[in-house]
Image (cartoon, rainbow, N blue to C red; front, side, top):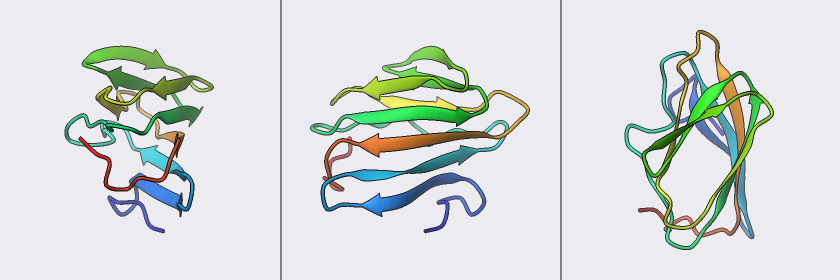
Length: 103
């Protein structure tokens, strides 16, 4: 599958039947989404594999250096931002396959 933004953004590698998972590539100055989003029932894990980013959970910003892992619980609004001068890569796993579960 392609990155949503062409050469960056979210790219799903597997959608169902039991989990969603993929890769997020953010170039300098990019965010995962324009606005934070969340899920009513699904938790989501983010593993920062390359570069240093900013993880945003419920409007609170957390440094996310390479090697950092975050678990975002249901109903927590989240986003990722790249304030660095290098691209960052994050692996994400949604704990259950519910593609309609987005707030």
